[in-house]
Length: 248
Image 1: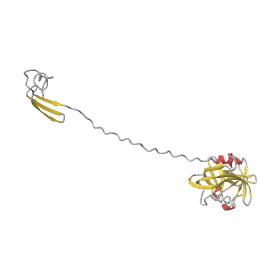
Image 2: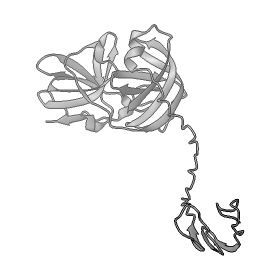
Image 3: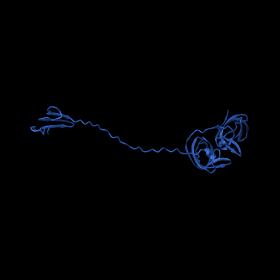
Image 4: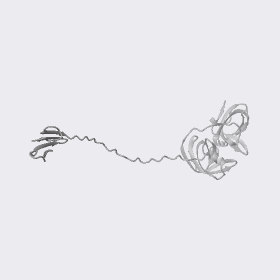
């Protein structure tokens, strides 16, 4: 190694040793080791510090796109009454009367928009009031009552049916679960007439319900719950069980 005076005449060459460890070096020589510093530096300690930081590279992962579950679309019961007969529907409703109770091979269901009779061998025999079902089939009229002839009926849960206080004897409420309060004004073997104070309506007892009318007397005040139906042009309520008729 030589210093800046190497080329000057009469200047002896510079001899020495250098010890290095990592960023630290120690030089020892017989002359000036650094001509940029005043005086003779025969011993020179240098620290070449290069600071380094270790960074952990982030690992990028691509999350799988989770498909958003599609909400299954159902027709409303009110659509059945609005669209042409023979149209096909997929309806989700609550059973309000089980199969065969009020008519052989049929049951009644209800959603937030109305009630309807469902007919067909596809109806499971073990369905009970409060079961939620999905019904697929086509619309038809049977003795003045719109119904769904079902080719598929599947249970899909349970729910509490809604009872509708009947404001008037209107076909608008056909196949709904309705309730009236009034006085018994006449009674037959299988039926009686209730006067609500605003209208009169027949209550008819189907044989399969095994409802006992022995305690129903003319003049008694009653609360009756049942399916609103129609027979030969006359609206009537069909109770489903003994507890649907309460003396008050």
